[in-house]
Amino acid sequence: MAFEKINKFAADKQKLCVEHDTISDELFREYGVNRGLRDINGKGVLTGLTRISKVVSFKDENGEHIPCDGELWYRGYNINTLIKNLDGFGFEKTAYLLIFGEMPTAQQLEEFNDVLTECRTLPSNFTRDVIMKAPSKDIMNSMTKSILTLSSYDDDIASNSIDNCIRQCLQLTAVFPMLAVYGYHAYNHYENDDSMYIHRPKPGLSTAENFLRLLRPDMQYTELEARVLDIVLMLHMEHGGGNNSTFTTRVVTSSGSDTYSAIAAAMSSLKGPRHGGANLKVMQMMQDIRTHVTDPQDKDAVRAYLSKLLAGEAFDGKGLIYGMGHAVYSISDPRERVLKSYVQKLAEAKGKTSDMALYSAIEEIAPQLIAEKRRIYKGVSPNVDFYSGFVYDMLGIPLELYTPLFAIARVVGWSAHRIEELVGMSKIIRPAYKSVMEEIE
Image 1 (cartoon, rainbow, N blue to C red):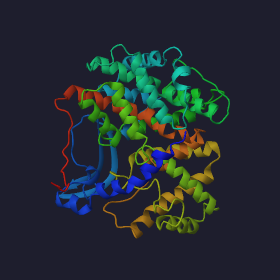
Image 2 (image 1 turned 90 degrees about the horizontal axis):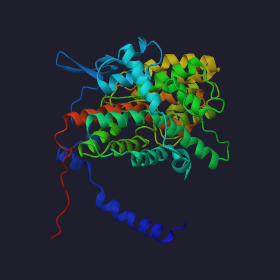
Image 3 (image 1 turned 30 degrees about the horizontal axis):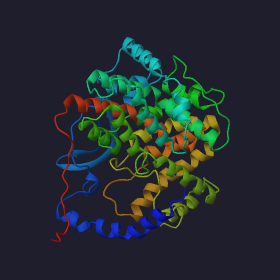
Image 4 (image 1 turned 180 degrees about the vertical axis):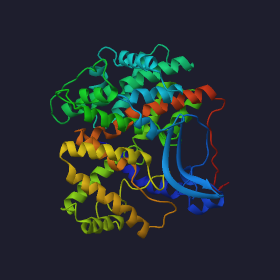
């Protein structure tokens, strides 16, 4: 469609918006306002309390704030402990823990799995009439459209009673893999002229197993593939409550809005490249590095090219080594450390040891270079996005599904925070903004 007139109008007026909407750093400092709700040391402004999870990156010792190895806790359990003690697949067990606040017994977990299995269904003709209609390469937008449309099938959409919210959250958690994979297949068929196949979830399978079953033409996968994907989902389920999409969930919930609207808002936040799309940039960067560094064993060549990246002389010119550093963690990201051991196993099984060597070289060299060339207030280490894209690539998952996979995991955390907000809600979340406009008259 042609919109020459409005496009020209918008282009002409953009200078006005930049002129009148730019606020200097000096004014932020003058009024003590922290950009991005983070202080100069990167510490988040305290905006709420939660019992759901905790992120640790510094510890106070003898009156000093000292960086430490990162820790991630779910409902009082260290993520390393949860994964170490796994007996079977962990996504469902961890989802129960996060949403209900306690570790399930074997019987409770069986009942929970049965409920999720029963919920893995969409309304009649929903796939055809909603997902396959107007397919989009942006699967996050496709999923968000589906989430909001599902609200039309809910006779009790507006009730914010806790039991009703639990029902809605579990139903959405169960169908998220279907919304993502079916959305991709529709796009891949209509836009890429590829074959169309829609598989049904199989009762008794885990979320990770069903995702691979839905995605692949032959519905086949190995035990290792499903286990590694299950670990990835566990690591992405929740992250302290202060991340952008979870905060969005709580803000929308505090207004009294419904579950579908709150989760759709969180989806819109997560899809941003500064939040859930980071592993895509890692994969694009890695492809660029492979093009220019032919021998991953040549650490001098790797170092030289990483130096060009930091100088803004390579890849996208942004001066960033993607997958390095985190807004909270300093010395290490615990999720990355857990994931790396599983990545190594998968790389060996897939014959990707050369690629793994390149990742390991970058993981060793990049923090050193960043420390040398940048003024940083805390340590720099690889984050979970550094390896998650590599895992998805080895599993044959298309790029379009990278961020949706994040959503499939994080919807559990959003659900837990929505419920916690509803249980303790007394006020709408309404922060203050200081007006710095000039009064004309």
